[in-house]
Length: 64
Image (cartoon, rainbow, N blue to C red; front, side):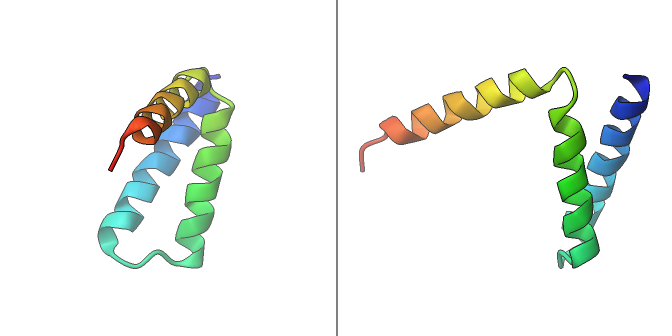
């Protein structure tokens, strides 16, 4: 578990640096993909899923 959290943190830092740099290259997209893959395997995944579901419900209930 400690190794996967370290990998997630490292990939998160790299993704933030890549996005702040400007252009998103193929290597940057790969880092973001790996970040999502490893993040899905952590204990934070259910919390992230419920947060995204709640956000989608709020946005879906808005009337223009």
